[in-house]
Image (cartoon, rainbow, N blue to C red; front, side, top):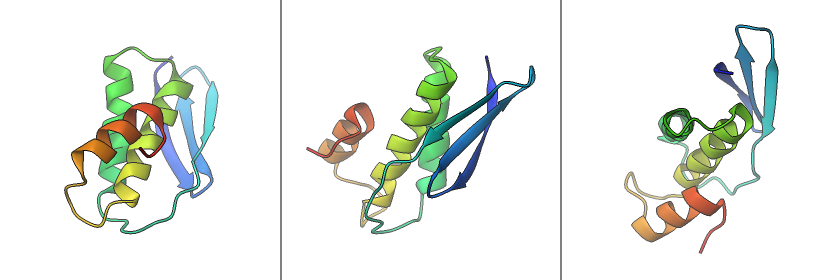
Length: 93
């Protein structure tokens, strides 16, 4: 299924598919340091899941992890170790 994701709010995102299937994935709780770039990071995480042919829930979860990494960064370019580790595992090193 390929869906169209819609970020709802701090609680999560929902994806709507053409066949009517709806998928929700909760957002992880994060301490927001800077919101700039979180939307772009969400889109990049989602699209990386599309490229790897991940299921819809996995795409949304990956998107949330990418956005969370951006939200925790003070700079436009986060520490590479934190970004890579967070994006892959969903946890901070």
